[in-house]
Amino acid sequence: MNLHCARATLAVALLVCLPGPGPLQAAADTTSVRTGSGFAISRATHVVTNAHVVIRCNSVRVHFGTQEAPANVLALDEELDLAVLQTQLALPRVIAVRGSPALRLGESVVAFGFPLTGSLSQEGNLTTGNVSALAGLGDDPKYLQITAPVQPGNSGGPLLDESGNLIGVITAKLDAMAIAKRTGDIPQNVNFAVKADVLESFLKAAGVRYEKAVSDRPLQVADVADLAKAATVRIECSPSGGPDTTKGPVKFLPPVVGPPLPAQPAPQPEMRQGPPPVASDTDQEQLLQQVQIVEVRTPYPSTAPNLRSLTIFNGSQQSLYQITVGWLNDASARQCPVSPSAYSGQKQLFVSVLPGQKGKTMGDFPPEAKLFCVVGALSPGAPRAPDAEPEK
Image (cartoon, rainbow, N blue to C red; front, side, top):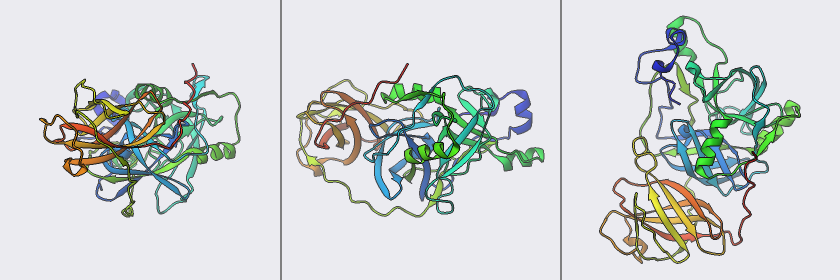
């Protein structure tokens, strides 16, 4: 969310712009578990959240009531502050994106999420408000401004209309203390969400199907709360990188810092062997029995050079939900090793690939990783029906 001072109008700059490399302030503690919110966007267990909630995480887990499961980042865009996860945790409801009518200034909104983990209710918190502007700081068209109160931990939660349909993803709030120091006045309820149409473009680019609905039947707030609660998860990140902290008048809703996660036993994949490994950023294909790595790319070389996007082809008769990828630091290898100990490292990634189709997954790999092999795969045992295409 690059709401830099240089992009703001003169009036905004005079009121809120402060010196510093940028206007966003993220969580400073990157050694403890961070938490945020997310919500189910498809029946294939895709979960949407903010990029700043899950970027540079060693592991990600999603929690729904007493249930929890690991999750994998399928796509991430720091500029839009959006990410989509894949998890095997099936949720009771999926939130549909509002298709029509067009959002109007002053409409009522409902925000839901898991703010201040450890202090507030673990069942989620709901706040209400209105659309106070149809653009963000400096008239940024990617964002909505809302009055619904949000706190650290709300990041990535859904912003719903009166019909319970998605109109945005909670992402940031005005830094009241920074504004107070600059102007002597404390701003109230100036919060921001990524617009739903921006999310739609992101999901389409990531190949994630979703549902759309018409907002023509207002519901009671309690009914919207039931829908949100059935589709929203708490996300925990075990960080792996250093701080991304800047200073300024707008800040990310920082993930809440909590105690370390207990160690989780990793599922044991079926170990396989295969022919040639795949080099990053090449078009070479790898055949590994029925599961193939088609290509490996570095989608964000400037902002996330260790994040790799892997395209998987599933030639089997069953749906895939997890693969184990082994990597080699030696670029001269011509064959995938048979022994797991021969690899420089291995990583388990969640995928969602139907029989005979391609799918993508993402993961962080060491910068020295040169070649990639599929060394294991897991299937739920039966093909899964695809989601419906987005409504036009």
